[in-house]
Length: 71
Image 1 (cartoon, one colour):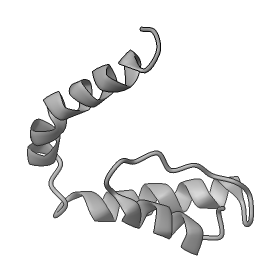
Image 2 (spheres, helix red, strand yellow; image 1 turned 90 degrees about the vertical axis):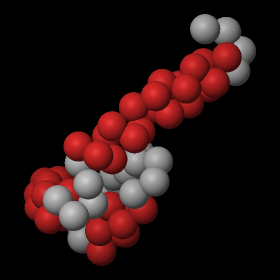
Image 3 (tube, rainbow, N blue to C red; image 1 turned 135 degrees about the vertical axis):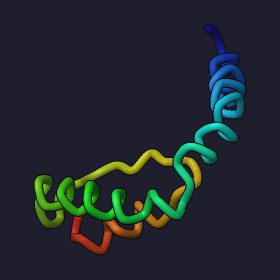
């Protein structure tokens, strides 16, 4: 992939699986698991240490990391 072609290909790949992902992992099930995993991650990283949340549409996870003192 050259130039910005990778960006278009990445978006297409995400769009291809987005509906199936949402159906298999609905928000009703996801948040408790997210909270547990991200809380454990933030505890492992430690207070004030940098952490990167790379989710495209799930901002609550980034807020949870910030609440747990990971920056």
